[in-house]
Length: 229
Image 1 (cartoon, rainbow, N blue to C red):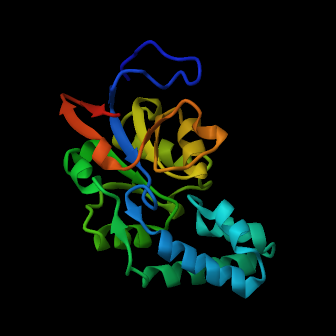
Image 2 (image 1 turned 180 degrees about the vertical axis):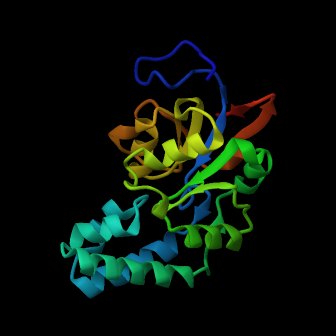
């Protein structure tokens, strides 16, 4: 990645408004697709059915695999697997209300397939359905929940995506909206950009965009140049 004078808060954050990387890795839910209403409705049903506090569930569910969240509340592994599968099946048929994050379509259109990947905690079928439902393309490299042994906040998904693109993870830019994904991106060594309003100590020193209308990408040779606010 291009080097710039760096601030002490985060050695991955250049002060310039352009960042050059080998590839761009994007989360899906909350980053490319606004699925908040559907996700919160499904977890609300889970909380009611199992007598757990919805706010507590939502505080740990965003950006994580379904099975990992369910297992936090249902200690029996068999029950957790059954319930997680039920939640995933319910999500597959709930496509109303999904919208693309503003600017996502234009950003993806500006990136060649060999320079972009989606890394999601959703199952592959759900990821493809949601992207398709909001009119976004599915990159060839899509790393989904079932593709990794450890989900976010482990860096496995981003490392796998970078490897599939043939580039080092620390030469990639990651766009993420949730705590688990942001921690995973930083653990992978990627230049990490927060999408939306998430606040936590994890984001100290990171770039932030409200949505992708604030991002421009162009390709120069085998590099991607990102213009950021």
